[in-house]
Length: 336
Image (cartoon, rainbow, N blue to C red):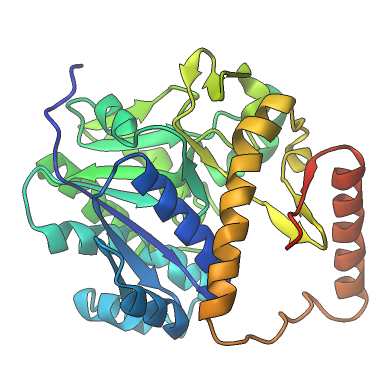
């Protein structure tokens, strides 16, 4: 299937002030690949909105949730019956539709991006891989040993999803929006899971293309499945240059950045360390400093859980962190 001519692209994503530096790292990676498409951010708190209003980044705009609620009248009444995360998951297809309507140009490609993606090559590659299709989705590509256990989270990952503003694209997007409005629980139930499980039904619609290359949405849960190499500063995945990586689960622990590689039983190989994580952590720390300087001081996050269960959870997480650091699945933070 041959690619269409280059079309207008609009990206959308959402995050709160705690994730601002990751969102900024994503934006920088897009711009570094000479992609100057419009980016619409659903600001999940006032600080994110104020930051982008003040910075006036070319092509980047932020809206608050109440603006999306005005555009989608069925959304606001759900706030009382859904958790905070379930409510935000509900917003995903609505935000994509908002972005598509904002551009209001037939043929536009509206793409949702998780804020923890990072581009190493042109985003146009994935759009070209969509060909003449109207919807693009990417499989998790779990290794066989993880496939059964993680199947409840869906065949496809919601980190990158593309819709063309045409009849087939709108049909799938409208069904997706109606589905998350109807149910968007954050626990796998009857084959559904948040905003992600619904992607499993997409191939039943006309115009849906699955992007199969491992160069798209490489992530800790699938690195063990691919041949990843670093040569002359370029990371390749099964022979194709890496397009974008999903930096899922990376967390700062004291003087370390702990990756999620060990969570999925995958090694932080020299190619991944030098070619993927080190560039990302360098960029992330730069934007961490910007966010810290620009945002109001925030209280330390509350410890997760209370009582014996909370203590057990924190003990488990601390053990995982120590194991990741000991086994080389972590990177040292740069000291200022």
